[in-house]
Image 1 (cartoon, one colour):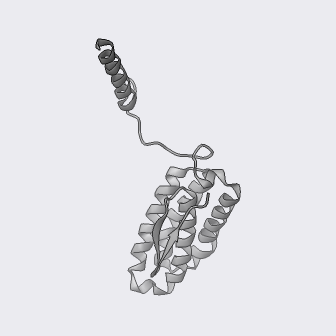
Image 2: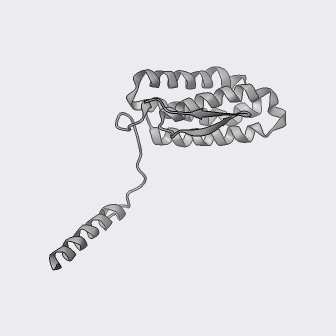
Image 3: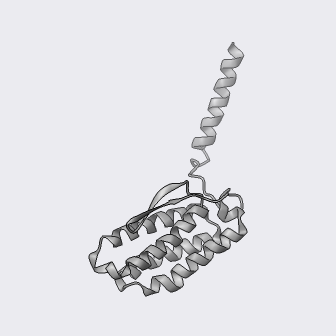
Length: 155
């Protein structure tokens, strides 16, 4: 019985030390996912990855510049950051950029002056959703304009 208590104490102490860092080690941060080790289709499906990169290139080079000045200004930096993160295989960074973009686009949709941009914003949103699925998004209902599209990752 005493041996079990000592073993449990040693194991728990080692786990605590490994998770919180020792005296000379900083605490362990969040896991950063990157290709080729991340188990998401962007890293495991070469054809799918090419399609995602093509969709984002189209969004950055053709769709975004056709937006009004206001919408273009809001999306320029983050859309380029998403494309760069996907191109680099930085899954964690790309996921965060995609979420920020979806929030920015939702805010832009609320601006009545940007009504002419709505179709282009929908097209950009589809490119972002394509990336999110390749980045391992779980099946959810994702709002596109006034319609809801069920997104299911391909396996």
